[in-house]
Length: 175
Image (tube, rainbow, N blue to C red):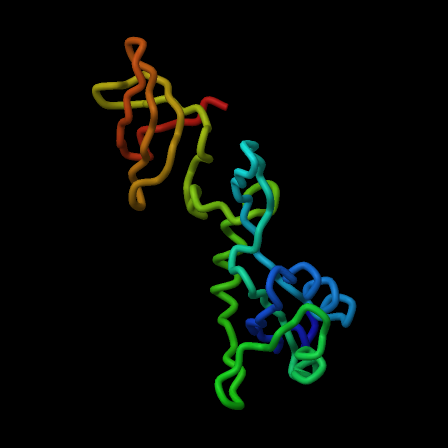
């Protein structure tokens, strides 16, 4: 990372309605680093269901700018951009930790995942086996985290699906 990168700061930019991708492409053409978090959304239309990537924050994207790149008039006049987020003459920076937290939630396709926490030991849908307790040896499917050290698991037991919350330390992956 060079010196200008270490002094770069994230800012929020409002886009014109449904023009997030256009704004991103045009800002990137100007050499600006852009982050547009996307979520894979279930769309039902005319009796058909499909999955489509949509902006996680509709109408917004983030730009990573050094002091030299903070040419707000140029950014404001970029095709697809409505305006940077500004309060009077103050352009509020976004903490790097906020952007990093969003990026940690990306799934294998680059979309924000709401069903998986960054520190979850298993992925939703992953097969797991219980190592201890009354249900020791039973296998199931990891559903989601329920607190920092508890997991919801769907077990197949006696031809029925049973939801069980257990300590993550009692689970091991079967994949």
